[in-house]
Image (tube, rainbow, N blue to C red; front, side, top):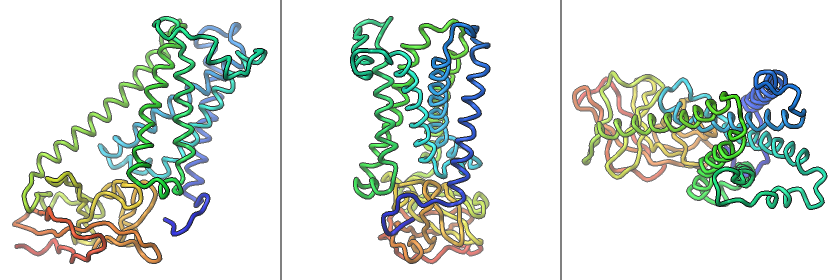
Length: 348
């Protein structure tokens, strides 16, 4: 959280996160360079630059697959929530890995080209109307451009400049980039692959991403169906609330509410973080405040306000208990409105 522009707010968590990601990238590339040629049977024919390009290219693809799996995994199982922290750093590193891949390709295939390298890359094959031999290089460049836009605009400055809605819409381009990379692989390397391993990994990765998103969507729809509608919306039974965690419910108007249990009391706030619409209901309670799992913005449970000196606020909701069932009001209060937490011992 910040009330002014700062380049990067480094802390121990971010440094550790980046070190782990970089270590995994280094280990993967080193392992690929040493073992992949022997596994694919082209030890003698594969040049070092080609192997390097393959190493960084496959690494970028797998990294992007992991990034797209983090969100639905966290919704399906709360044990994956820690992976959401500093996910933008993961994305920026992925861009630089992909950039390294394309530099290997450019320097190897077009190093002695009489025309500029990128121009040669785009003009050497223009067979856009045939399936076999399709210029897959263009798909890779478009994917790299999309990743470059996401990496460049990942800082909070662009979030404030563009606004949360436009910024988030822009960053949905990661799915477009992933689709381009799958097409890049399908039209390119897979057509010349003798060993089926990479084909299986590519297809399996794409199916995994789609499957996890469909599973998470189905989970949300089931929860929305159980919630119902009206002036008061059913949340859950008292014994279904775990201390320090939230139950997320969708109201009839489409808004989502996070109902937290903290110290045997219940409070309800908007599930959308005021910073970037992150899922507050997936966050942790730290020092009495809900901490957004995306970027660490915090909000008090009773009034939805960020602790001083920060000024962000989210809407709050009233709760009531009928027997052993908790209901949330479908009418949201203005951001920052205090609502007395509901004592779980009291019955209506």
